[in-house]
Every structure is written in structure tokens, then in C-alpha cells.
View (cartoon, protein in one colour):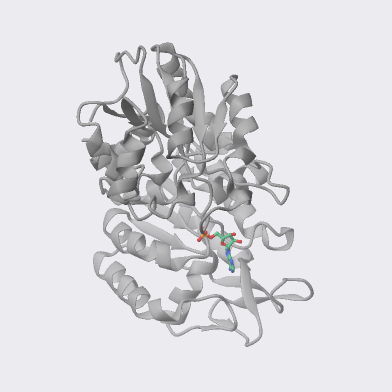
Length: 394
Ligand code: AMP
């Protein structure tokens, strides 16, 4: 794969796939600009090498056009961060886009509208990728956080630039860090996984069981595993269709002697909006009518022991509904333990939107050794897999 080093982009229009998928608040303002800041280096590189930058990216998971997920919402943040005026066109393919590109001079930056307004993007559509490819003379993929997807702009497109496709500076840095963990990460290696959607992470857990020494499964995801082991989870979130798969993962871990740590207790609430009473239950004895919302003291203490007896730790996903103060103690507790782990010379990395937001909310980014812009992409790389978006550059 070609990373950026001494190529010249003089007089070229360079199509750059970035990861600008930043979280937006209720007023649609950017609440965390980590991914925008992380994208600047590659854009600066191209401009310094004489080119013009056409930026393509996605925001959220729109179903068709959705003005709440328009790239326009983040245009001024990008412009401020990059220190440059940025042009915008409200589509990512078509005549208007091509016209705007034809008027670009070296050093200009053009941002195109959310790629996912076209469903062909996530389908990895050949025709759509071809249309995108016509926009640039060269192609750079710097969207590490989306490179685990076989999407049109991260995967299908690359073949249209046989000698002019590159991995961006951020992509290179992320792969370097993960490569070092896989090659030289000091055992025991621990993966801490949280969040709500077990469906998107089950395959990852299944592979991680073979790669790491210990896994903490927490957050809303834990209940599928607790139920699979015969526990009573009250009205907590779980995925009935995945119980068997969860059971198989627990059995596989046992065979491979990979430790799986689940929460011991939980802070539960009675109604969906989480107002009103709360109560702490043992994780496998949650009464009907109660929903587990956060891990509680016994779990935090147990996880602390697991973390402090590991040497390499990576964390992705909150321990509870951390957005609500009442249910933020578990995630805050983990952030504080990670700080101590780093001080104790363990190598700590975190990644993914929620984990980065939590770390910033409850602590400082300097509490960990490295923050990855990717959540799913980081985990899939740590499984030892070559990401589709990276493979396509090779
Ligand atoms: P994910 O998108 O799968 O990474 O999940 C992130 C979301 O999981 C956050 O918005 C949390 O509020 C949510 N979450 C974490 N723990 C729980 C839980 N026990 N019940 C419901 N949602 C949860």
C-alpha cells in the first residue's frame, strides 16, 4: 500500500475520503470535533503538495436525504479547524458537483454532501463508485473509522485509481498503533466492550476471544450474555435471536481459556425514560419491571481488578446510559481506572464516538495513551483482520 510520503499532487484534484462522522447535539452543533481535527493533516499535505482537495464523507445513518444530517451542519467547524474557506455543493455526484470541481484552483477545498444520502454508498454500488471516481485525479482514503465497511467510497472506488490510490496520514497512524499492539502488545491483553448493540459486536467478540487474554462485556450488551447463561434480567435490553450465539461464544472462551468478565451488579430503573426510582440488583436477579441502566459498585470494583492485572487495555463502548447523569457512574468509574492503569505503565487505548465523548466528559484525553477515531474499525483491526478499505488500497 502507498502511504503519503513524497508524491506531488501539483495541479491535481484529489478526492479524499475522510471520516467526518462527528456527534451532533440537539441544536445540530458539533459536540466533539476529534475526527475533524484528525483529518486536517492529510488535507494540509495535499495542499502543500500543490493539489486541490475534494472532500467526501458521511454523517450519521440517514435514510435518504435528511437536512439534520447534511454536511452543511459541520461546514463551519471544518473550515475553522482547517483554517480555510471551504466551498460546498449539496450533492456528491452530478453536474453541479462537476462544475464546481472544474472551477477549483490549487489549494482550494470543496466539501461534498453526505455520501449516505445515496443508498448506493452503503451498498458498495459499482455505478455510484464509478461516478465518484470521475471527480478526482487521485484518491486518498483517510477514513479509518469507516474502513471496516465495504462501501462505495471506501472500498469499491479504489480499483478506479490503479496507480493513484493512497492511504492517508490518519489511516497510516491508526494502523501503525494497532499493528504494534498485535505484534508487541504486552500480555495480558484486555478488551473492554460496552454499548447497546450486541448484534454489531457479536462477530467481533467471537474473533477477539482468539486474540486476547481477557474480555469485559458490559453495558446493554451484557444482558444477552447474562440471559444466555440463565440469569434473570427483568426488562433489560437483550437480543433474543442472539442468545445461542452468545452461549457459543462463552463456551469457546472457556475452551480457549480466555477470561470473560460480565458485570456483577446493575443500577436499574423502572420506566423507559429513566425518571423515578432506581434500585441496585445482582446482575442475574433483576426483577420483572426493572431495566438495567448502568453497572454498579461491585462490578466497577471487579473490573478494576481485571484492568489493573492486565498490561494492554483497549476500551470501546459505554458501561451504561452514560448520557444521563444518573447512569453515568459506571462509565466514569472505568475512565478513572484507565487513568490509573496508564499511570501504572499499562498501554491503554480507546476508540469510538461514545468512548471518546465519555473520556472528555469525565476526564481528559491524556488519561489514555492513544485515542483511535474508529470504534468498530479499531476492534476489527484488533481481531487481526485487514479492513476492506485498507485491502482495496493494496
Ligand atoms: P452502541 O451504539 O452499541 O455503541 O451503544 C451506545 C449506546 O449504548 C449509548 O448511547 C448508551 O446510552 C447505550 N447503553 C449503554 N448501556 C445501556 C443499557 N444498559 N441499556 C440501554 N442502553 C445502554
